[in-house]
Length: 214
Image (cartoon, rainbow, N blue to C red; front, side, top):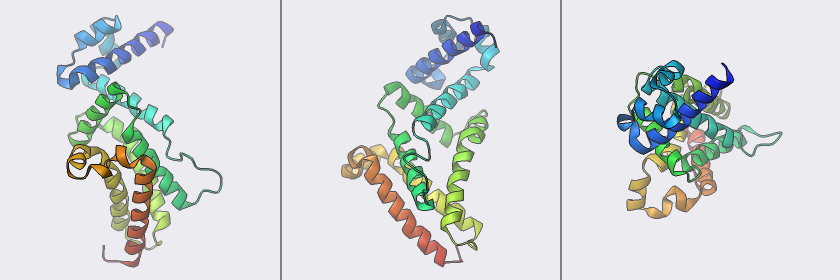
């Protein structure tokens, strides 16, 4: 890709971030995005194919930035144990959910959350590039923590339990603030919440390791 084309593509991405954050998916138009980017509409289709695929590119950029800023091995040094890796993983997810306080980023995160609950036809790209590898990593940690003969279904359930607790603090944040505001993630702090989820998960993993009927 030429330097000029690369510059055009980056301008379109920057404009798309702004427009999608401000107007949402339904309200955003290729016309407005291209005008803001100083490009013609054909350039949007040339580089991304459609408005919907452009949204996926914007969300991919968001997820990649999160991964780089809060890697799943956050804070780990040499000799880290499997338990250390589990705690680091939980901390990483929670820090991503809290975000940096950037209003545009928070609005884009809501668009990503919508994709999680109601995936569009282009969502599989994000699934394979970001979500499945992250899930596989946690699944591997669970396999190491559970006895070797643990049924695969139990391994998946334990993995889902950790994910679910992390996502609860984000997806239910407004409900939490109304029912028990003192356990809202912004009140607890990531480190406290991560330690709680970690200890709760270890207790559950230990119990599940004793059972063969789950």
